[in-house]
Length: 127
Image 1: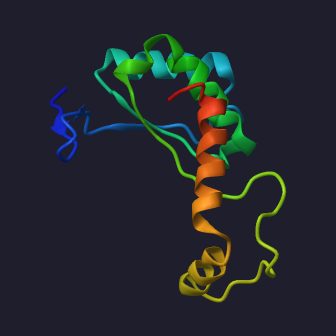
Image 2: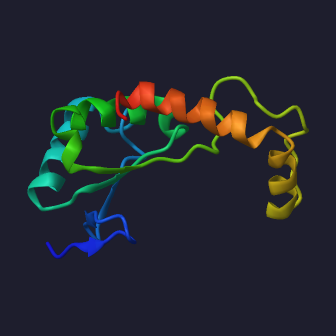
């Protein structure tokens, strides 16, 4: 695997990212763990998840699958998806992406991102 530099971070990242959208849902935990192991064997060190994938179960599965080898993974997740109780009190009808951006920014961004990040770190058991 030929790795690429991740900006100025000094990290070397695989050009292939393992997506985990189906983990914790259609792809059970045992199968997900095997997929993660095979990806690592192939040199993949970049894994992607999101708080809304299968109601947060994907991140739980990913966290367990990489826990013994966490230092060798570059982990990406998304914080903007809504899970659990609705964070926005505005109607769910949005006319455009621009409208969504304006509605979303009505929520205090800093508080929301910090709360979500803390929740994600707890789910992933990661730092």
